[in-house]
Image 1 (tube, helix red, strand yellow):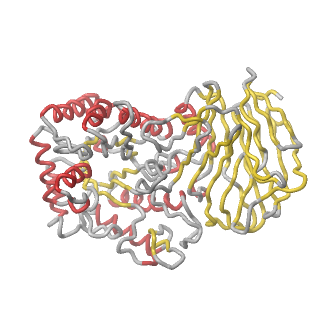
Image 2: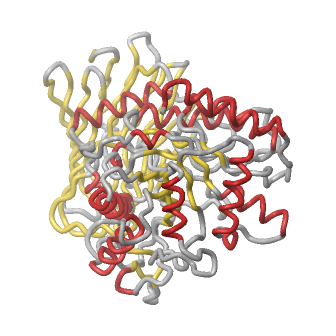
Image 3: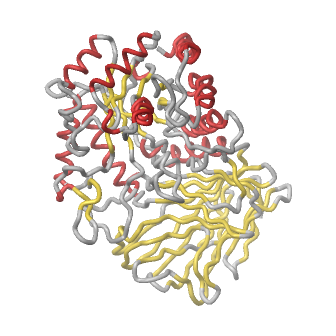
Length: 560
């Protein structure tokens, strides 16, 4: 059957649909069923799987009704429309969801059956490699709110979460796999592209934290064909979300000062640390930040915004200045204001240091592991901390650089309040921060690394995040990779600003090369003062001149 720019050939007995382009290009053999596993066991289809088709509005609607080993009923509905393919599964019964397999599932006695494909290349909007953007289609990929750069084998903490959309190509033609759901239904932690030889499937991780008692409907998965490239696929992804009405309304108005050049002290703390054999966190002091800004000013470099980074506070959860490092942070911020500058405070998501246990997610032993944004004690804690940091009666800071959102708690044995988990729980935490900040100071700036349209209402600027290192890469790889990251942001959340970041630079040469493109990607951010940390390169007059040139180009382009 011809539908739009492709054809569908139903294979009812094996419950898949062969999809080909009008030019004869073979795209997929899409499985028409799913598996929704639970803590009590795998969801396996058995016996006859009834497939029914009906033409509707120029397309084809296919329902696949299965006998399930764990659910009272399971029905997958797939709509083949002229510009896309939509699929969604509904189950009834009781269970705690662990993994939801899409475009594939278990069917006895054959085992797990993925969809077939002719895919050659794949793309993830989640940066997980220093140089590779487009990969072989046989390499898996993960988009997640969980990850940690210090853990071996986990390189997915930079965008948490990236947009829920993978892209893949056949003969240079691109398709997208978009998860479409409102944020309150995004109670999963990760979205996986899982290839096999000659095929693939997709998976959402619920970790046993979503309880089904009655009916559960999976997020809609949309396969859209015909993209000219990965960024084109991401633009289409955002269009699908808008059309479905699942993008939250953004109410915060952009303030002019948000576009000001940024100095973040973390890189300078690290550079000082490697030269003095100290960890960087103890170096977030009033004395050092005065020295950083004085040295930059002496070179004619005066940022509009200053970020005080980790660890200015005595405890992460309570957000009070460490008196051993800051004699009077409120007065220091007032002095920056008098100089025409704004001050952002680094805020560590999820960290429960000094938080009461009843404000926390706890492990199987009852010990706290992370803040729990749905616990009343946590709501009170975060609200009070934000009010203190931003209010005139408190520190009177101007906003936050939110970090470590990748430490979203993960685990089926964890205990928490409320029904939200994973992505939805991270959004709830950021909503508390963002909404409280706007109530206290309407032009407060909240910077996150969540370039996902579901987070449009809880962030103002997207930070491109840390640089990944590859000593074998061709020169200039940092600039190229950061351009890819900026392309993701601009494709899916073009209404938000971009903080270009600038740490950890693998070398002085890569830092200099990145300076040449920063002003084209977003707000230039400077992390270093005297030199870099990784190769311990000490700056000379030409390095400060390069910073001034970048900032002057940015300002002369009318960004301020």
